[in-house]
Image 1 (cartoon, rainbow, N blue to C red):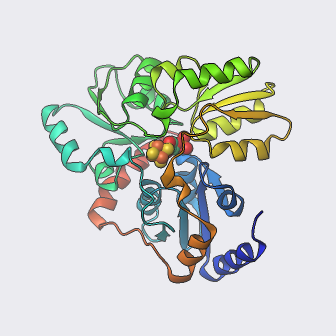
Image 2 (cartoon, rainbow, N blue to C red):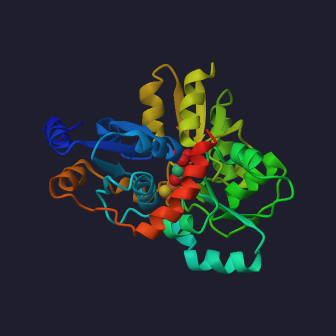
Image 3 (cartoon, protein in one colour):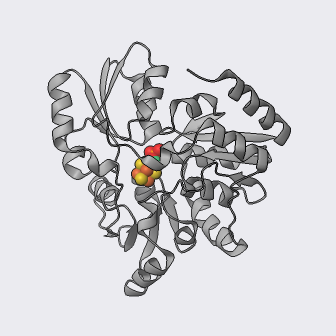
Length: 304
Ligand code: 13P
Ligand code: SF4
């Protein structure tokens, strides 16, 4: 049950601070319900680039809030929970990428948005799960050597979709790799009519069982459009709340209800209030990192 008093408090603080609240689709239901805008990494980046608010409160994980700061350096960007990191993003560092670039001096670097700001600053172009395939088709020529970090499963998926080979990194999402083919097969046995939607961070055997591989917002759009009445969802299960809420006539089943991203669940309404009250935790990045990372993000946003 949503706490009306907390919601009123957030509304008042938001107005006083001229703040906007962005939330990722994996956030807990209360946070989803309170946010001004819900979306995937790409949608949230676009929103951050367009908002007129002075303050962005980012309910998600650190790389997302950093992306908002890089896009809007003149704004104050707050993350209500300082320990909301992304284990996959932390599997690559700028130092490691610099070493890899030395081994492949001709290669261009395509980084998944799930990376620290310092890695973005060392990259030529960014992508999200929503645009990776299109971007690789449009932004690179067939002779290009491409380093793709950090998600080896997304790299594998994009490689299969585009026919391009990548120098990839050994990164992966701890939540998505816990969705196993057996989980999908069992849900398919229980719901034989259901369409299977999975995130491209899933492993190849899971993607091979799916009807569609989509970003989280891609799943939202597909669920709305399709005539299918049942869907098995192969991603972090937090999105099932929104899918059900926005599609009351349809049924959604998490492929693995335990494949939870713990960091995405750390943000609560009380932490959002605290964040707005005392302006914590502010994302601070150096001008140099912002300037260099911005180029790779703007390169991506141009390809819409
Ligand atoms: P989306 O961009 O598809 O929302 O994915 C973000 C993410 O962290 C997936 O694990
Ligand atoms: Fe990172 Fe995976 Fe969590 Fe997404 S779901 S934030 S990729 S750990």
